[in-house]
Structures are given as C-alpha cells and as structure tokens.
Length: 273
Ligand code: DGL
Image (cartoon, rainbow, N blue to C red; front, side, top):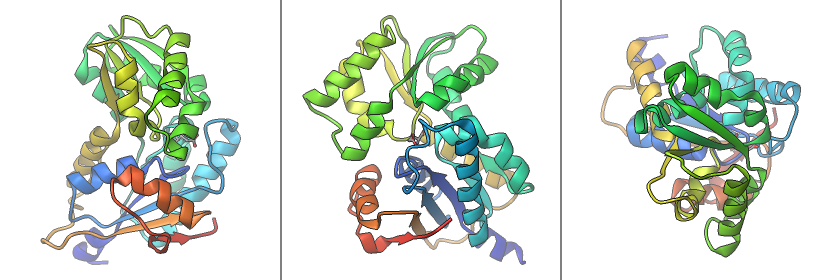
C-alpha cells in the first residue's frame, strides 16, 4: 500500500455507545482532514456494570470489527474498556497502535492541578480497577485521588436529561457520597459525562476544575500519527462514518446531542459483531 493510501485510512474509534462521540468530536476538531470511523456497541451498553471478562470480550469484538474496515490507528473512547481491556487489545491488534482514554484523562487532571486533590466520576468497572488512581499517581505521586461509581449518570446522559433539578439532585447525591469537599478537580472518567459537565460544575464547590479526557486524547492521537508519519495530507476534509450494533434512530437522537449537531438515522449503519 502506498504511503498516501495508508494515510487515507480512517482512524477507528469505539465506545460502548454514544458517549465516545465526545472523543470523536475532539479528534475531528484537532485533525479536520482525518477520516474517522466510529463504532458504538449500543446493543451491549452499558459495559460499566459487566464483569471484566465480558468487557474484554465485547471490546475485542468491537475492535476487530473496526480493524476489518481497514484502520490506521484505534482509539478506545470508552473509559471502562480502556481500564479493563487496553493491554489485551494492544496484544490482539499489534502492530496497530491502540490509544485509550484513561491516561490522557489523568494527564489532563495532573496538568490542571499538580499535587491536587482529585475526584474521579466513572463506572463501577473503572472504579473497581482503580484505573485513574494508578494513572494519576504514576504521573504525580503527590496527588490524592478519590473515585466514585456513578452508574445513574450514564442513564441521565443517554436520556438527554443533562440539566435541571433531577440531574442536579443525582449529581449532588453522588458528590455527597464521595465526600466531594475540598477538591481541586472532578475528572469525568466516563465518556458520557461531558454531557453533564454544566450540571456537575453547578453542584461542585466554586474553584473546582472539571476535567475530561477528550482533548488530551486528541493530542495523543495527533502525536501518535506524527510519530508514524501517518497524518493525512492535503486540504480535503475527512469523512466520519458512524456504525452501531443496534438502534440507529436512538443513536442518531442521543448522538446528535454529544456531537452538538443533528444526526439522522440514515447517518448510522447498523452492524453485527
Ligand atoms: N462509555 C462508558 C465509559 O466511558 C460508559 C458507559 C458504559 O457503561 O458502557 O466508561
């Protein structure tokens, strides 16, 4: 394959559902010429309450589907799959470069408040593995990290109830459970949670910085492509293909909120893994 043809290959991005579209959006903004193919495993959402064995199996199947499309790099735009299955995916797909979202999210938090007091909001599976704690302490041993599982925030984001008193009450309950006082940052350790950033900021104490991994992940993607001399050249804007394993209409309705523009069900191809 010529260099040009290789560089024209899309970047594969996958998540358990529509949440990873926040990462897709950041990659699109950072790298407007790149072709992108996104897979949301909506048939099996949520991953966050499943066992590690199931999450690894689902993630491996989703990644294999994207590899079948012909991709030059894979982004695991799901914190749960990144926390549980990143090593397994790297082994299964080598030499393809596989980038997760946990480390870039940890970098964003450490850069925002070095030596800070961080609270990670994430799924049960991500919290159980202490993935963010490990990643943050590896970069900043002076930091302190609390982690809070917030499954109901996934449902709120999926339902599009991203503001108002119900969202506020649920966020407040989770922050109380986590003893969300005296914090420097709240890390959105789930790709669904950027949709709730406004309400989390409202409920959190003044001065708390809300951090997510989308833009730092896009930076890591750029650096990885540059290191491989695999940036797509020219001026032509890249395409974005959207695949889902179930429910094109729902994917389009909810996904449009994550992308910040309307989607139609005909923009989404339903695929089997
Ligand atoms: N996208 C998942 C994550 O970032 C959350 C939704 C799920 O549980 O599958 O962890």
